[in-house]
Length: 215
Image (cartoon, rainbow, N blue to C red; front, side, top):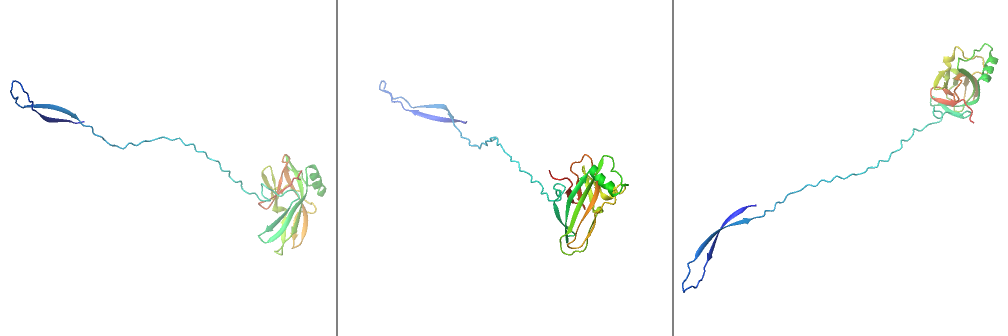
């Protein structure tokens, strides 16, 4: 707001007719206060808070695929596994029969009366394995008890670890040598925990076979 002082000269000529006389002009000086409005333009920034609800849809993590013969998906009792050795020799293996507990121990003692009992909290399982050389000639196929382990209550017991009490003289023993087209069966006795309902036979390091008949 600004105040400006203006000199206003007001000339008033008064024509007075009084007694036939003429009045002299007068000068009047007044101080006038003038108010001036000044418009100021400025930018105003307006901020507004907005709440946004974000809905996150969970994405299911795909489960890893399992394959036949893995620990998660062992070959079932009586199922024939078609296998390859050294990427060239094709053969099959089947668990055709399993006997466990007192009946297995009777078979073991009948083979040799001096065969020892299993360790404490264990019992024997006697498995019959059938092997067939199914592929073209890629040399001799040899499979023995030393290629086999048992998995019981999450523990792997190799046949070589049972040397001090492993039964002998089972007939036919699992000691197999085949040429193309050949087929043979053999018996192997392995210790399993008494309280293990689902022991597995392990061939090599990665092929699992169930030793429990399907219900």
